[in-house]
Length: 244
Image (cartoon, rainbow, N blue to C red; front, side):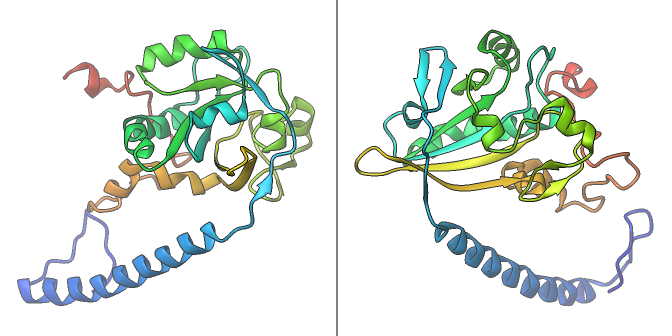
């Protein structure tokens, strides 16, 4: 069956639909098995000892990276784009957090802690956190090299050159802050290891809304936009949200 847009759908019989659906199911199963294999490869990456003593400003005071584990053995960090002096956090990172925040209790049940890390001072993070009503651990890396070492913050001079190191290679990037997800593990002796990081479209792993949009006839419906996530708003800024 040829690909068509929702405006000009192919109209078929129930028998044609079932045949096409079964073929698509075969491809979906192949995709699922490939995803399982990639997840296994991800878990097989070597662990790298974190050599720096990163310390973050938190609501509990100045804490080391090890404290972000909150007694658990695994840690997921969202590199949240919120720079010094910004009036609010990145709307795309906020879209990510809207999906992650409700999952934190479930992650904890599987020995996984979560923290968001931003370059902005804590005093600038907390008002936005309260506005968004996210019950997550969110700390500031303002006084550390953490964001630079994980290639999610760049100097104005770096951005001006048109080439920053992001997503494992040099590339142009329009902002001084970038999104990402990093994963860490804590050994039996308390040593902290970096096990995985993903950037760019890799962060779509946590964007459940996108996975749902991929199911509907119009899909993500972003082709006519200047950039893919142009339509995204902070969850308190959609016009339809105000009308509920």
